[in-house]
Amino acid sequence: MNPGKGFQKVLPCLFVLIILSGSMTCDLLAIEPKEILTRSLEAQFGLDFEGIKKTEFRLPRRGYTTIRVIQQKPDFTYKATSAPSRFKRLVILDDGKFYMEHIQGSNKFEFFPSLNSLEAKEIKRKSLNLIFINYKISKLLDGYILARPVYVISLIPKHPGNPRRKVWIDKKTYLPLKGEDYNWQEKLISSSFYTEIHFDRRFSREVLNRDFPQRPRKKVLSQERFLSLKDLRRKIRFPVSLPHYLPAGYEFQEAVLLFEGRAVKLTYTNGLGVICLFQMPSNIKLRGYLEGAHPLVWRKRGKTFDLKGDVPRKELFKIKQSVK
Amino acid sequence: MSCKKWKKKLSSYLDNEVSSRERSKIEKHLKSCRACFNQFEQLGRLHRLVRSIPSEKPRSGFYERLSERLSQKKTTLREKLVGWRYGWQLSFPRVGKIAIAVSAVLLVSVSFYIWRSATSYEVNIKVFEEEYFRSQQMNSFVGELALPVFFEIE
Image (cartoon, rainbow over all chains, first blue to last red; front, side, top):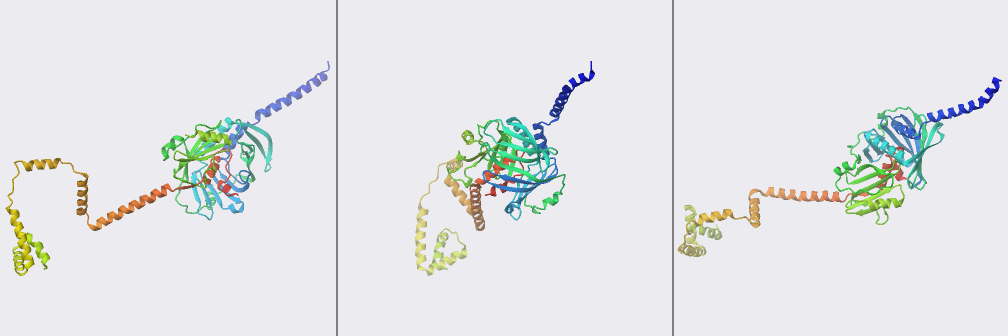
């Protein structure tokens, strides 16, 4: 018996075995899309970077903005618009306590609850969990953004009539570098992407604070956020009406007190899509409202309601009917 | 002194309620003034007539019963109002009354202003649209929309 002949017979089988085991190891090492999204959410608060981000709007109006973004971990964000030139003056600063908006050279200076606070992060985590429940998450072919390798993740709604999103996530840092939002009719609403990004850049907060007035007026919050329905009932001056019907997958997210408690915003989400129900006593005038021109703005039992959401109109009318 | 003032004192003179000095002055004037003397005569007659009316004594225990009934009687609203008015007139000087009236007017005006400002609060419908987009920022993968700018894009 020739031992060389036996080896020749085994060789192709060995080759196939090596290829198979190699691909299996790659599959085992490959990171799950859910894990990518989880890491990506944490990365949004856990990185130091400076970037230029462009956002293009398609619907309801066409336009674009270019924003300089500076993120300092764990909870500091600075944003300043640089284009179009007529909007250069807007500066947003979030120091983990307050989300502040200021238009330079004007009196507009507003304080909101921080979007980098622990409560806000918790709400974002909950909304990610809802994405896991209500969306089919798939990893598409990898690509490159700004010469950096990226994961391309697609979020397709399990229930029809909901918005979808495609997101490009940096493989090294897990920061989302690009995102595309589509409405329930599959039309592209907006896309935002970094045109420039530099990681590990640290800035002194004092330098960034210079864009804000040195002696800001008393810190009066323009709204109160992250309230549960129980908290809301304790704080509000009028009885709150709730929708008894919600599209599949939607859950209560938060209640927000607007105009020092004169109005309420109830927010519901399925992770990506948002439905907002606004309500306030009818004695508060609603400027810009034309009777009959806004079918989802209505008056009932001494209150004015406004319903907004990126779901089919039929669904919005069902929600409207169920508000009691 | 004019006759009008002398005439006012005639009744007190008849009731012996004037001083001796004033008494002599009145008598002196009555001798010199015919009109006052005539009035004095009339008043004197009336005085004598009233005194001549026999007075009846009440039954025994009348005053005790009367005081008991008065203490039991409920005060009517009209009586209360009269009482307050009387008390108000007595207890405050004129300046104090003016100060209270001005304060009351101010209080009513300020209350009306507050009520007006509370009821005439105005909200622009665009704010709700802005707030809707603000809520989208609470999603996991949005954050750099700079929403106020969005609304200024035409």
